[in-house]
Length: 162
Image (tube, rainbow, N blue to C red):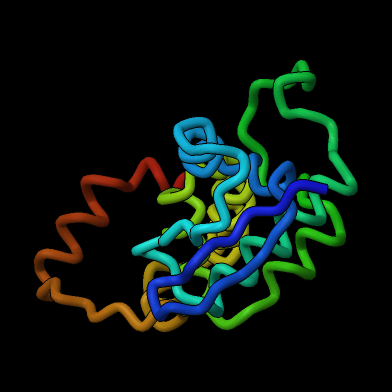
């Protein structure tokens, strides 16, 4: 088994299965640019050790247990209810870690992980009022009452679904 050493922004080194980590387009491209025999850690300037550990766990699991490709599905509709049990449990982490994981998945270009984490956030929002969303994500409401009423009027069509 070929391995790769990745270095988090805080300087911690992680050894991982090279083939598993090729789920990341960024890492796949980096590895293509360097010798297969290199033992020099690849620095990941935007990923903390805590999040890199999660990324490696995700890539390793999906390398060992591949799921059907979304390209194989004939339904083009974007869904948020098609998360398998392992992935759902994997995303049961602190909200701040979930958002860092989204950033890492984007930075490392791991589309399935980015889709999963974004679906998880979408499910957290689904069916909530703007006030509930603000409370859930600690978002300050910077609209005046008049501005908020104007936005509600302009977007009344959003509320009409039943």
